[in-house]
Amino acid sequence: MRRPIIATIICAVAIAAGSVTAPATAAEPYAPVDRPGPKLSVPTATLKAALQCSGDFAHSTLQPVLLNPATGVTVDENFSWNYERAFTAQKRPWCAIDMPAHTLGDIQVAGEYLVYAIRTMRAKSTRDIAVMGHSQGGMSMRWALRFWPDTRSKVDDVIGLAASNHGTTVLPTCIVQVTTCLPAVWQQQDDAAFIKALNSRAETFKGISYTQIYTRTDEVVQPNSTNATASSALRTGEGAITNVATQDVCPLDLYEHLLVGTIDATAYALAMDALDHSGPAKVSRISRSVCLQLYQPGVNPLNVQMYLKVLAAAPGLANVPLPYVSLVGVKPVPAEPKLRCYVYAAGC
Image (tube, helix red, strand yellow):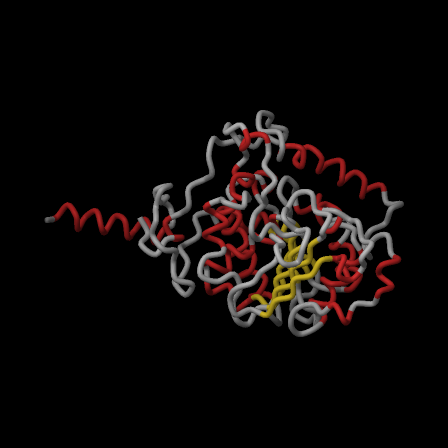
């Protein structure tokens, strides 16, 4: 009789630590939304080193923003030449979280970085924060909110730019040929176990405003061609939600996946509307004059650094559809990373 008891104790400890993976074929229901999250497995010193902040958090009346990067790039490559410059000019406090492996690794690990960043930013701020990200970065903060419920009381706004909230139906070569892919690529397929867990029980939570900005010309996150079927859109839970295509504001806006999260003035206007008002963005408040702007505030086409950042991002972005080449030192894997035990109601 002792052996089952001992096994149960070992399993319970593993669940608490979040360090043992559940079987790939596990059919257990997902964890309740109010169950406390596990202890973070990434060392605190590593998490601290990944978070860079700027601004007066103790006295600013502007909502602080946490910037979260897209798949294949660093946060510096994604935001230093656009949103960081714009927020600094506004004197808006902001932090940027640099994910390991060029944001190509296991998104469950990235979720821990976000948990730490949310807790740290709220502790130094006078008000709840906003978390804003591009592509994977517009989705992955929801992993932290889903499985670490204490983070929800610290976040007022979630802003996604071409977010992969429901994955994508665009299949890279490795999945078509059933070979290898980078971990984050596996996890962002529309039928991935990660995506199913992310959206389990509730996609949004009470007290948080969700503004999901996408483009109908998105070539990466699909389907995003219609509002009814948009992968970026959120639809369940008790959060306040605005799902909006840039074409709902500017019908001729042609900026695609990469540009909507970096230079698009329409996306920027929607994001700023969410930051500057209670609740999510409202299309009715957006001036149609943004349709005449080629790029958002913070972007300077005469700044050489902008082009250098874009060039620096190229290898990581190119690594996403190239399963056999490690351009930035991230190892492809033969299958999607297994879900951690904390994801499941029954743990192991």
